[in-house]
Length: 122
Length: 113
Image 1: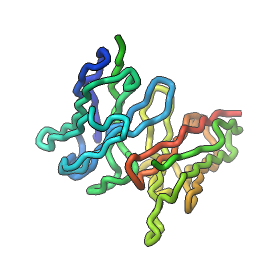
Image 2 (image 1 turned 90 degrees about the vertical axis):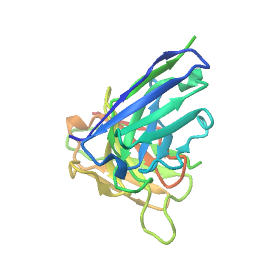
Image 3 (image 1 turned 135 degrees about the vertical axis):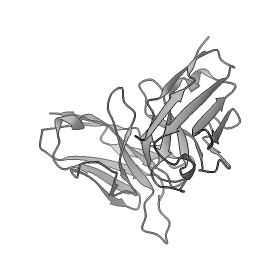
């Protein structure tokens, strides 16, 4: 079964750090670009970052650029999001999502995890 | 950034009737040399992640019932549910993946009348 499972969320104070992980299974992980998307409580979707299958040159939303770092370890079939200098407005459910077609960074997101909640509050 | 607008904000349709959701991008989401539109549609039910319905504006994702269809060109796109079923109650989002940052529309809530 194709599956993505996020972990690493939690409660953190403003200015703090968290590292999210996304464990992939059921597909050839290294062949697919991956994304992080977040959803604040009661709000819509906000794309956060994307990375190609080989792990080169991630892309970021301006709202997180310079604070978040996306990476992947294809030997472990795992995606990461290192989040530093967290702000109250980063509070959201963070999803990892797989691009539908192999070797394309740009495409629909066909597999999503259940999400991991990040709460930034003092 | 490409801004995605959706209309209506919400709609209520009788079971078996057609539901139509519109999405407009602030600029083109295709290359002039291609007739491919970098546009996807998602369905999200409460407590669940979004589910991909349509990509490339009109390609149905695997396992998606054929009552869901996507169409459009230029900057105007439509998601049609040809015969609304009870399980289609959800929020629907469009998304462009033409340029970074990928952006989503604000969502359209679909209910049963």
